[in-house]
Image 1 (tube, rainbow, N blue to C red):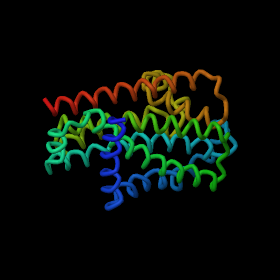
Image 2: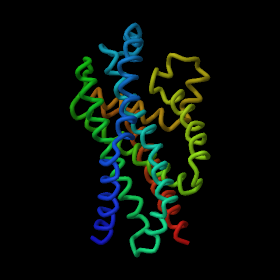
Image 3: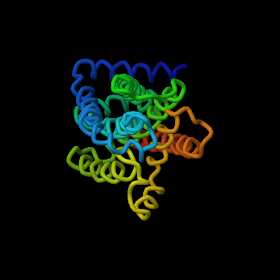
Length: 251
């Protein structure tokens, strides 16, 4: 109960900060929406190759994963500001559980991601997307899991670098291969065999395939198993890294 109370106190403060300055929430939502309206129509001629009746049935799940990855990766920038202002130092002198300091922030990021995901799914339906209700719910849950993993990793990276100038190029260096090799924009099967083989080593490719498969309501398929396993593993590893980084700050 003490852990939950401490996590809630951190979450409440982080939420208040977001509500005072919702710019990051709006900016994080604009990118996938622009992709939806500007890139989505380009997939219409590829419907037969995508194996769907509507391009957005393929595209929206990919945008969900992109939202979970790219939006959450920027969560650490606000933590650098808090560190510079002495907030992290003030938290260090309290008896609060170091995991609670991270979890409170993660809950804020996950709730923000949930709101953005619901808006994206709603826009997808308006554009003709089709999908199983249970599958969409499971796909959103997978997105939240991946988003939580990326947010935890972003917080750990922020406390490790303590500099926006260092963190920004690192994130950009990671994002580019993730975007190109995870099949978010286009299925990897459209590319040459060697590129598809390379993408098999990209965990986010399996997560993307799992979200797309869940939208179709087909839960008993390999992409669902591998994608769910990777999402859980990434979340556990990122949570461990984030917690250990907060503890090192206390050392």
